[in-house]
Image 1: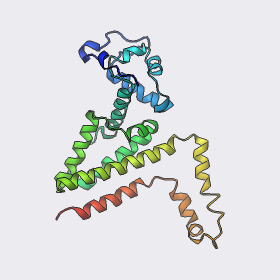
Image 2: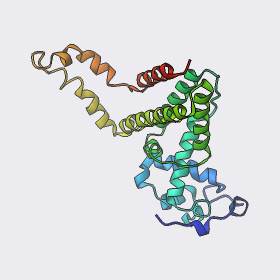
Image 3: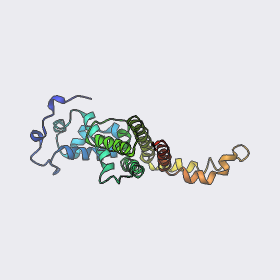
Image 4: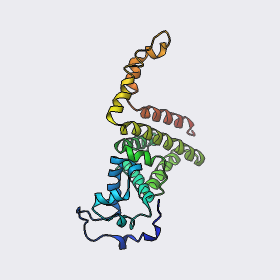
Length: 235
């Protein structure tokens, strides 16, 4: 993607004084919020600055006064998603409850914006929301009593688990409705029709499989990870 570093100017100089033809006062915030909506509608791969300019009612070139490149803008969208997950959350001081709440918030925010979640999970933004999230989670672990090497390693395991499930579950949510119904229906057809002679374990648990495979395994996986963290906590 084209780098437009030379065109980015300070916030005080780039602020548009008049609304666009759609009534939007162009700002970094307005651009990111609109981009997040468009990514949700069309996916990151189909997202273009031209389409964003049309949605904002602005010349696409004006967007490069706020962002170096299209990729720079998509990183800002990914960072916005992180911020949405932590919005309004306050730590309680109980490390396990706090980590669990953060994990569930990350997962829920991703499912609310599944197309953007696939983008956010594998990018490192280096922006304010990501920095705040890392500082928060490392603080929870260090203040719980984990030595620094453990705190870093456990943070890594925690966030990769959260983002991994976020991508997996978001990809399923982003499927067309017909594909979702077809995938879910497999548990009621192919797996129920197996012979107990050849597949005794599947047939014995077919009802449980059909119910359980329709929901995310993340809450259980998160609790298992937190159990493992608690077992490693120095006394």
